[in-house]
Structure formats: C-alpha cells, structure tokens
Image (cartoon, rainbow, N blue to C red; front, side, top):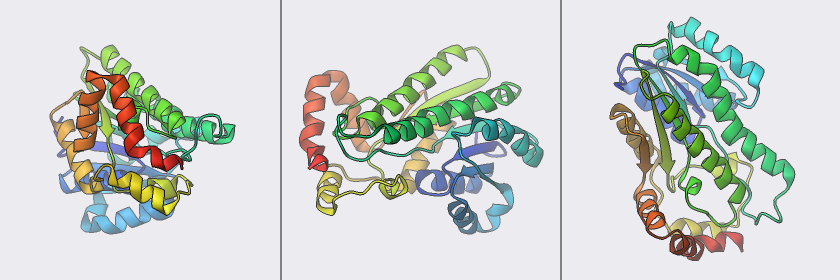
Length: 268
C-alpha cells in the first residue's frame, strides 16, 4: 500500500525503530498518530520531525490497557478523519536469564506488552481499517520469534505468538482490502534493553552484539516501509535475520546450536 496521503498509527513511536517509522512516514507524505507510554519520548519525536510535526498527533497510551486502547480509534479518526494503516511496533525484551530463573512478574509484563498489546490494538482498529478502500496491518515480531535466543525464551514466545497471530490475520483477511505483514527484525541498534528495564553486563553485551552487526534503526524503518509499499507478507529486516531464517528453515537443530554459540555469553 502506498504511504503518501495515508494515515498511520504507530506504537512505540517515542524511540528506536518506532520513532524512525514515524519520521520516515511523515517525510513520505503520510499523517501519523504516534503512540507511546513515554510522553517525553513522543515529544522528542515531534521535535525531530520539525515542520512535519504538523501532520503528527501524539497519544500517550499503555497498550495493555484495553479500555484506553478501545477509545484510541475515535481519538485518531477525530484528528485525521480516518485510519489507513496500523504498525504494532511497541515491545520489550526480558532479563537475560533462563526460564527456570525468570520471575512471573517479568513473564506477565513481556507477554502483556508484546502479545496482548498487539492484539488489543489490532482488535480496536480492525473494524475501522475494513471500512477503507485499502488498509494495512503491520505487526513487528522478531528474529527471536522463529529462532530461540539464549535467555530470551519468554520474549521469543511472545514474538512467536505475534508471528502466528499475524499469519492467522493474513489468512482471515484474504479477499478483503486489508493487507497484513509480519516483520522479523534481527539485531537493531536501539536501547531496547534499557527501555525494557533490563540490566546487562557490559562485557557480555558487547560480546553478544559483536556476533551480529546491529542495523541502525533508520535503516530498519526504511526496510519495513519498503515492505509495506510492496505489500510483503513477511518482512525480514537485517542480514542476520535473513541468514538465520534460511539456516533455521534448513536445520532448526543446527541453527539453535549456532545461535547458542554466538550469543550464549549473554547468560554468563
């Protein structure tokens, strides 16, 4: 679906990939409703947008709050008249610990934000999107949604849930005017660990990051928007995501051993 002159809702718009998606959508001629729980982050995104901020509305929202989310479509449509696209980008990681160590509070938080938040936003906006001549839902999963990453079992499960939920949406919406895409970013150079409240040993983090060269968030956003305009079903972002997708399809067992060798230091 073309981006120009469309209205997009982007979650996680206050930082990282979400911020870059907002900025690049605006630059491409779209209007954007930027959603984030971090008011300061949204204000910074608006500042970076410069003159384009006139085509941007800010919505401070906890996507796990279903009642608040249910009111968002009316807020956005009252501002812009319609909604053409939804990009569910907001997400967090878990502490880098094994599944027998991670606490239930952390498990619930990761699942609620990554999966339930995506479902909440999708269910709230889908009726509005189905009224459009053309619309698009884009859900951001992760390379960790199809490949197990050491110490990120719950995060991976949440993103695998996003993957299958999105693929099911695609199947259900075949024959309608709503396009559906699922995104699998690899290593991206954002501060997601800090924003997730995850403390990491500096040495282990550096060693883990060196296994894959992180893609700058602006390049990741550009790849996602290119995939949207091409109506791609699966959007793999980064050479690492593409390589690991190939390797995992070829041999899941070998790929799992490979990723443990590359990133197992994060658990030390």
